[in-house]
Length: 62
Figure 1 (cartoon, rainbow, N blue to C red):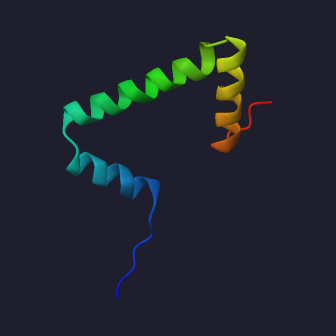
Figure 2 (figure 1 turned 90 degrees about the horizontal axis):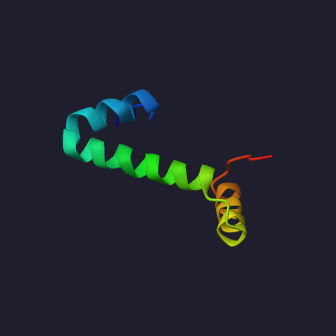
């Protein structure tokens, strides 16, 4: 059985083949909205929950 390395380049190529432009745009919009929320929401309760989410996702934020 041949095994290929699972790389980012391979995933990008697979996404180009399998996803439509509308699906790619929707995904990009979702990521942009999530990024905006993580960066700019400063209500203390929301900020703390987003802070904990960033740590759970493995993002070092301080």
